[in-house]
Image (cartoon, rainbow, N blue to C red):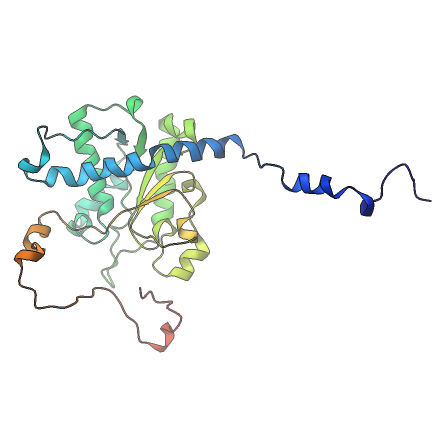
Length: 273
């Protein structure tokens, strides 16, 4: 026999259900801190990188009274063993000059400013973990091979976590990584494989500087990120890219990339953008 003193599920007040459905979500404290911390620094990080990479290349007449730009965010680059960065650059000169060399350029620019300012890690707002993952050139194709990227980055994070206190303080939320290859921090040139692999869990709380960027949601953008342009050596721009109004242009369009017409690539599996 039904207990008349208690309403049955069908007789419950629908307002109660509606109120529960609209109950505000409470994010765990680390997530709230991560979002607040990142959005606080996102635009400052973008402006600081612009200052580091572009203002020193301007002629003195365009720099203003001070030749030293003063960005509002202080970024400290960790001094990692050469096997994470300088060793790759020493092994092949292409490491610092090819299309994906933003990982080297950002590191060198930050180191230069760090030395000039005498920045100590205790004074920093953000921390760069400088790992060159695009310098492992394949002997077969000459293109960067990324098979080692995840393991190399995981080793670097383990080292930083063990020897410095700053990663553990924020669980990596104030740490910056450069992922200048396709597809971002998914570290694979084939999109379907990259999407299936996703971004490594230990990078998802950090800030990624990447050349890959698309509108809308994408598994390889499932972390806070700032999009960088592909790398062009500074000395190339004035020589090979003259000002439009001063150049005689007889080429209507130029394409550098890959367009597969092979039947196997109907789905775009072999990367054609």
